[in-house]
Image (tube, rainbow, N blue to C red):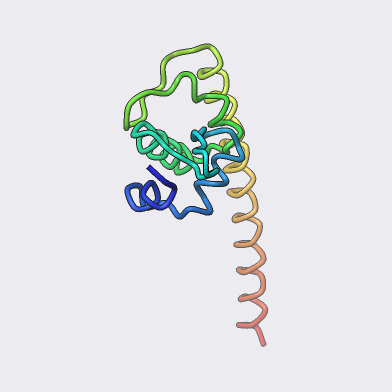
Length: 121
């Protein structure tokens, strides 16, 4: 199938599909005319990519995990790199969450102090 058909079947615009190709996540064949030709397995690959992106993984991380990915869910086989990457990503998210919680607390203190000053005028 050509890129337009893959786009229609997946709901992902051609520009994004070309980006996935540039990142090594999709590998189409090339016809004699130079057009990209995708197999039916590309539909599954795009669904997996989209779900992993939605989980917060980067395209680089997805490329690293792709050999361990199967199914639409997608299912991740317990390859050592899978576990290491997921643990590292969760640790990074936990750190970001802690930083955001701290920032929110500080902003609430500023807001409360400012509102007290306003009430005292």
